Image 1: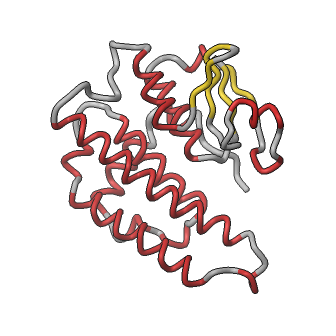
Image 2 (image 1 turned 180 degrees about the horizontal axis):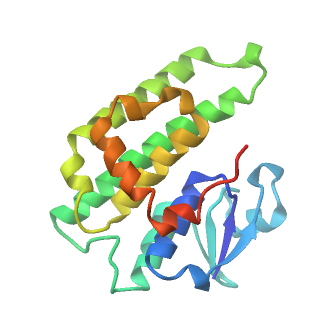
Length: 201
């Protein structure tokens, strides 16, 4: 398998953490890709021009991160990131959706910050920050769902919190959400988190 990736993409990181937790990381060749340069090989793999995209074979490619993670999960039945059915499945998928929403908001803020200051959208930034803050409060109230057997929900939440530290350190959510901070500190000790750390800058 080949994974089109950018080392700073949190969506890619989610896939790489899932692969590591599933014991599949050594079966995936990483293809470094800058989606902002519109490389033709990425456009051929994913018409959306986004990473991650996973090439399974010459004529079979998967995107986006939830789909890729679920596919990888189907390859290893000893570890189950996506519960098959019932409440545990919906808990995991809800947490993943919430975490991906945090990432979507944080990425929008990040992209806006790269504009010249006179062209930035202050209203948009505040709206997205409010999305992130509400989501963090929700996670704080759902801590029991983060504790227990490993799921894609935990992976996604860990990625989202890590991205906030990486791109929005001024938010310093750790001081406000102490229970979440404690959970995250434990998650950061996992090898999958350590080996997928993005480069600084």
